[in-house]
Image 1 (cartoon, rainbow over the protein chains, first blue to last red):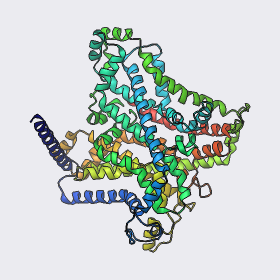
Image 2 (cartoon, rainbow over the protein chains, first blue to last red; image 1 turned 90 degrees about the vertical axis):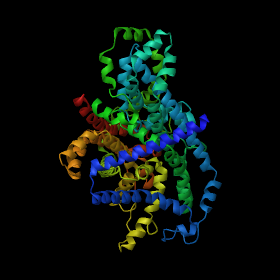
Image 3 (cartoon, chains in turn brown, cyan; image 1 turned 90 degrees about the horizontal axis):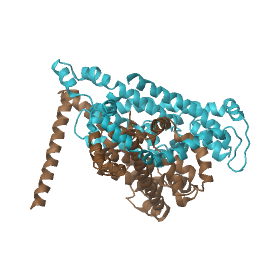
Image 4 (cartoon, rainbow over the protein chains, first blue to last red; image 1 turned 30 degrees about the horizontal axis):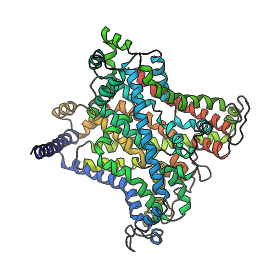
Length: 307
Length: 319
């Protein structure tokens, strides 16, 4: 009983939120472009054209991946005339390396995300809610290091990884990516807004700093933590330059790096090329479709880099 | 800075309206004494500080030192050679050429990346039906990795059988050397880049648009301002600050171009698209001259620093 009731409440809430959004959108339309049906039609047409242009390359790649290899290389029709086939996918997946690289990418992206969020949140908490010697100096250094573009460090960093024996290891791929001073900055701004009384009360009750952080600050900051995590994950999953520099052994390659090495090996096998591109593109696109709202908000919040 | 950013992020994350500003001024004495007794802060900073020191600060210093040596990727020893690398860099036509390519790409990509993103955001912010579809279409390419983008692009750009050449042939125009013609290649790369990354700027603009108070529009409507008038008198002026931020972020991102150029043309044809970062890579990892590559990195860093400092200037003025 209670379950069905709560489910129906959820459904009803969902429906009312959807209705509300629709009403808000209608108001927005009125406020921005006004009531003229011509202007509305024009804007809608522009949206359709732009969206079509933006989806076209993906669709073209997808269609090609389902063609027979012989047909893919013809300057021909959009639609396959010799029938649809999964041949390209069979070939590409038979080359088991692709799935291995995908697994590597997942491991790397999850590790980078977890470590970055954890150490950035800890540092942001310390900057925001505790006092310790050297705090201002460290804070200054953090802000200053935002300016340091990681790309120019590839040469010394590679040499350093060699010395540390971390070339062709997951640690070598992951560790340099977890330094994200911008994220510390973003999280600190959020933690600054947590009411101090809350933490003081807990301190008076004898809660240790770790408990404050773990049971008060983190739960209160779920939305920003998710935003940061999403942003870091997308970046880590797609990162090319650093994994490309630090891996030479195909066994440790992430998806972007591995994919860039097969391009030449396949030569002119367009259907197979597109099939592996589609397989590589799929995970994040699916995740995006499932959590679109969250991701859009996360990127919008974090993307400004705390500005 | 605080004002514009809070209005941007407030509807998005439910961040309390006032950020850092209010608290630091009015800290009760009790609180600061409680905080003062809390000495464990440095333990919380430690992991981040160690990671930053190890993987950011140390390589920065190490790289600077390397740039004054003749270190090579293969040999172990190296000797101090003073400013020789910098002297060589300043007289190396490749440095200037690749810098020029980098700046040219930055200009070619930044302008449409701002204008198209703004256009997309303005269109979506009209609240017309299909919100989910528009956001999805414009942002989806941003979720692709550079290797996938390059595969798709080189397939579209394929001479004769690629979609673009097929369509152009239908218009009766000859095949274009999208990636093989020195005069065209950089434009093609910029085109791909716009397709790939415009969704990011689009989302930033969209968030900013959502932060514009509706009362402004209501008041304007009462005053009888039409749609265009509202666009030019309310929307665009309200976007001025955020546009400044997006432009600088975009400039910094574009200057660091490497992936798509390396994967699409490898800097060719005839080195006509090679960016400075690829020259650093080639010098260090193909020619094994780590010391010289570091020196070029620092020349490049100087250029980026100029842009970064420009980014900080308006922030200071507003604060």
